[in-house]
Amino acid sequence: MKNVVKFLLGRAFFVATLMILHCCLEEKEPNSDTDSPSEDDGSDSDTETDSDTETDSDIETDSDGGGWILMPSGVASNLTAVWGNSGLDVFAVGEGGTIIHYNGTKWTAMESGTLHNLQDVWGLGPQAVWAVGGGSGTGIVLYYNGKSWTEVLNVPADASIHAIWGTSPNNVYAFGEDGETVAYQFNGENWSLISGNNVPTGGTGIWGSSETNVFVSAFDGIWYYDGKEWLSQLQYPETCFGIWGASSTMVFAACNVEPLFQYDGANWEASSFEEDVFAAEASDDTSYHFYDMIGFSDSDLWAVVGFDETDQSWSTRVFQYNGYLWSEQTVPELGSINLWAIWGPSPGELFAVGEAGTIYHKASE
Image (cartoon, rainbow, N blue to C red; front, side):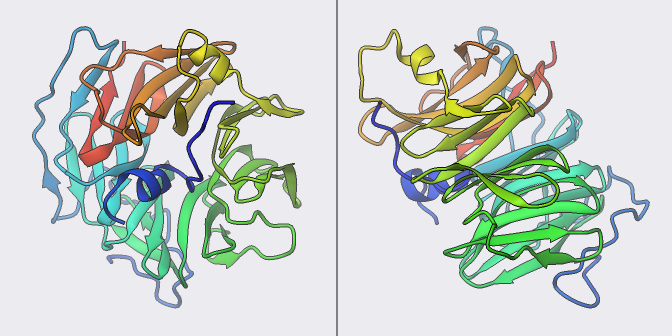
């Protein structure tokens, strides 16, 4: 087994916190911190707040970049998550409460109302987008209604919320940790704490294909929700810090020590990534870490993977999985820049975000 990177929590922000980085409301709830604003207010999803700042729309191109182009983001903050409704409606979040939006032409800075580091973003439509994060004594959930961002959940304690995902406006999950477990569920009106003995300990990532097929990566392995109860599916002595899937029979989990597990619908086993990638490499000591992944089918997945090239000097490579083989993809001028998240509406159009506001766009073919 290669000498893999030590424990990293959750998505890119935990990699950034431990190994790379130096740092670390219009519809406010009337009754409590745990109520959510209405998600169907008929607002225009193209409307930005008055304080938004437009960025330069010029794009640097490279004809040998495999379709990838480097885009100006207009921010210098580290970006740790990206998600969109389409290629014309994309959100990226990051440190210091940074949120930027892409409308198909340019990235625009948005007013988040927080200085907390944001670690994940996800939504159900133009008027229903959530961002989560925390630190410095609190975990937060922000909600975007198509006009502005509002804080809808505040978890007092030394907490941070790492991941958010759901199946409908009435069924959204948020997972994190405050030394143990922070797990909440939204029912369309209120956020409630998920309690009980069988709950993922320190949830770091979440992915699912339906209300009865939900996976969570956690401090103690991989958990599964069948619509009735949480079940420990893979007990693992090390932390698993991210989970992604293309279907119920193609799910990947990134963990410490064993960098990548693969689920085929019945069993979790070590992925073939090391065999595919390192077969032709002379060094047997390369450390690496899966930062993020997006899947479109069992035979089309994309991942951003960090490699410890020279004594803790990390760099990122982009890989594609075709169902049986991982292969590295060409990204121009990437060099030692770190990318920590990837998302796209289709295999032909992808966005990868990362260090110091870096954004790469794989244009539609």
